[in-house]
Length: 113
Image 1 (cartoon, rainbow, N blue to C red):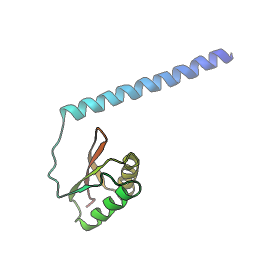
Image 2: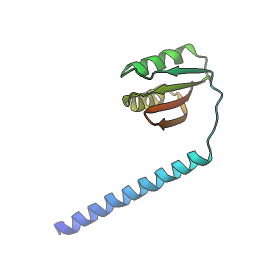
Image 3: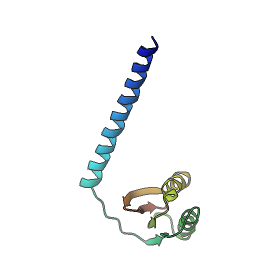
């Protein structure tokens, strides 16, 4: 019975893994075929800064912008990936685009209206 439970558990994990891979491929295909360009109102380059500075600088820039403005943030601190995604969710800031280009994390945000 223990072997049977182990097999079922492995199967569930395997199915979840396959679903995650399929979902990632769909996202990649959408991103490759539907690249959008945005007119950016401001840009912030935080490369060379480390946690929590990219987050602080992004917050400061956002506070100076009017609602609905679009801004770009470039960071190379790996922690900025999670930090800026959480900040956007917490503040209602829309992430219009996010991509990784080698070590650079490139965000396009839209300040909430």
